[in-house]
Image (cartoon, rainbow, N blue to C red; front, side, top):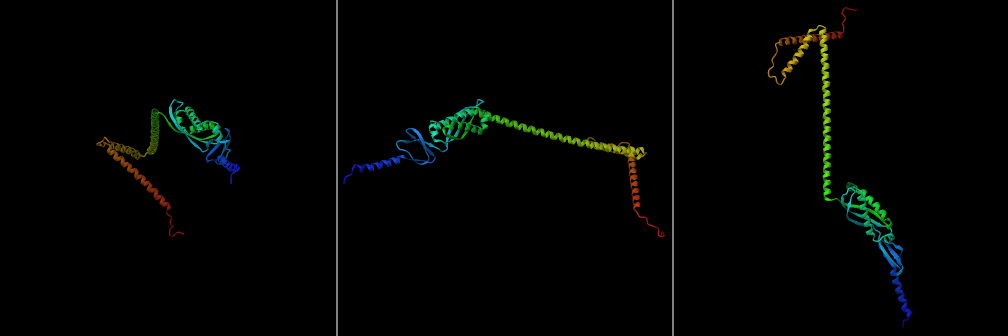
Length: 317
């Protein structure tokens, strides 16, 4: 039994159809987008999964990674506003949001992002002083992120983060900064010590002031007591009481003798010839005390007599 030409063509056509189907089936992995070009012109974007294209008419264009990616920014020298030269490096994070724009709006996406980031690092950090660079790193990162993201948005990408990793001033500048820091700390220490000394002196002065006030108050009270005693003696003298004069003179006499005896340079105390008069004066003091006690006893007896009840006589009605 022979085979006709039609019997041969049918299997060949079936094989060709199967080959065309397999050629048109495209599998896109997760996290990627493929662009499709028809006769060199972009037509559509293939999403992750199984996709079909027209073989020999459509072809795959760019294979774009849609995941967030990291780009190292190499070290470069930056001249600050105060003419300090520092070495700076960083890192940039970006994500492709629009595959056709990232594929057809810029040539060499990573190289473009890298150069854009490096240029803006020099621009932003070159407009600041060295002290601002070292103390405001977060502000620098925010400014860089905003500038680079605005510039790269037409490329269909999103800059998620731009970070400065290291800022390395020259060695001589680091030594100068260390000396400046030590001088500043010494200055603060001296200021604190001076403030402490000032406060101590103020407290000491307040203490002396309070002590002087207390001493003056004590002297004032002693003077008032002395004046009161003098007034009492004067009244007694005015009444003709000679013993009060003797008491006043004896008190002053004994005080003077006590001071003479307590002097540190005194080795021998000589009693004056008037010691007999002092004894007589002391006798007068004793007489005064007796009179006082006698008067008090009389007053007490009268008070007791006033409190005793009267007993009527036995024969009274």
